[in-house]
Image (tube, rainbow, N blue to C red):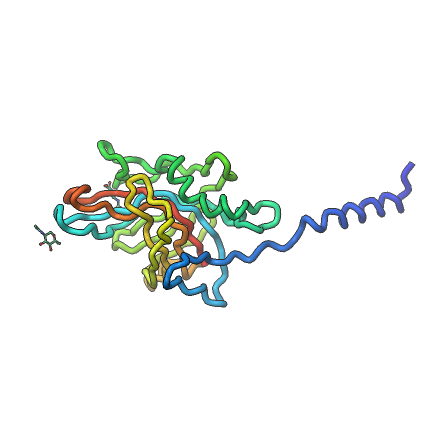
Length: 243
Ligand SMILES: *[C@@H]1O[C@H](CO)[C@@H](O)[C@H](O)[C@H]1NC(C)=O
Ligand SMILES: *[C@@H]1O[C@H](CO)[C@@H](O)[C@H](O)[C@H]1NC(C)=O
């Protein structure tokens, strides 16, 4: 029969054995495009709250077939991938999969939006978002539904992380071109710029003050000669880092 002392020793031994697996998480670092200019690193006082994978559409308006598409809002569903960050103890995924996930999701998953009747990628303006669902894609851990990205009635970009009670109403601070090797998306138009977004000053943010958009895939405008006059939608995915 085991004595109390040997049980205690066994318990201590199992704690010591478990310890090496309990390493501190890697500190997530904003990636670099490798281009001539990079987004500024987040200020030292900013705290990373969430990393999301966003999947949706970028909208553009063409005045006519010889114009250039003008950005006109976006809608996307956000999934929580914070704990998948490479190097995170137990739940981190390998760097290559992390880097390729936006392109893979764009290729493998249909848009998580209510598609407007008669349109290929346009969302239903009255009700763009279906019932929240987690993101399940082969080779990637299940990513929990986190919230929605859309432009509010005043045309201000909004991130509503309703699953965790965070919100960011933002304005663009800076943008840099996505790397040339970035995934060009299903319309082969290229990847939208990487962005640093700051608070809009409208008093609509909750617990967030900055958002970075990095490792974009797809989303760049079609040529108006191809898209025609009016609004067109281009599928995209990206990571959003919330501070
Ligand atoms: C097309 O739209 C652009 C931008 O609004 C305008 O500058 C241009 O004159 C228009 N061209 C034609 C042929 O209507
Ligand atoms: C984006 O454009 C599509 C048409 O392609 C439209 O159905 C949708 O409501 C638009 N959404 C936004 C946010 O502008």
